[in-house]
Image (cartoon, rainbow, N blue to C red):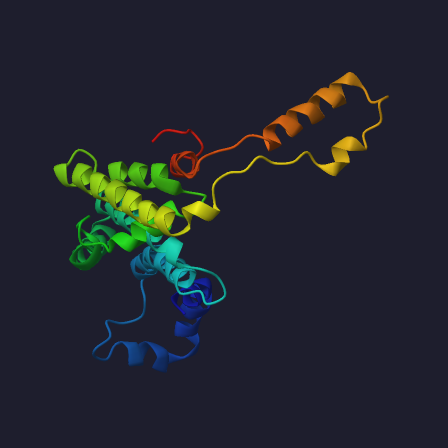
Length: 227
C-alpha cells in the first residue's frame, strides 16, 4: 500500500489544491498535516526496508515447494542485511535496523540457539553442502570460539547420522560395478578413434566402485573427496 501511495505522490500533491478538507483532516490529531517532501523520501526508504522482508517471508512461507532447506540461508540474509543497514549514515534507517536487530537477536542472534536440524537441512541440499554451511559460519560468526565449537558439533552430529544410516542400510547400498551399456556394443567398428576413446572412458567410469564412506565424504565436501 505504501509503495502504491508513493507512485501517486503527484496526485496527492494536487489533491491539496482541489479539496480543502483533505488538508484540514490531516491537520487534526493524531496526524501532523499533509505529507512533505521529507515524508515522501522517508516513505521510499521504508519501502526499501520492508520489501526485503516481504519477499523473504513469501519465500519461506511457500506451500508449493520445500522450504526447510531455505530457512537457515534466509536467516543469514536477514543478519547480513541488518548489519548493512546498521552501518548506514541514514539515521532513521539505522534506527529501524537497530530495533529489528534486537528482536532478531532474541531468536537467531546466537549460533548455538538455532536448531541444529536447520544446519543438516543445508548440508543435505546438494547446492550447499557442508562447505557452504561452514563458509556461512565464518561469515557471520568467524573468529569466535563458539563458531569453531559449532562447526565441530555439526561435523560430529553429521557423522553420527551417517553411521546410523550405514548401520541400517549400508549392506544394500555398497557400490557395485556397473555393466557396460548396451549402446556401447552397437557402436560401429568404423567409428572414429576419438569417439571410441570417449566411449571407452565412459565405460571405464561406469565400472568404478565407491564405498559408502567415500561417497559420503565426496558429497559433504562438494566432490573434493576430503573427509
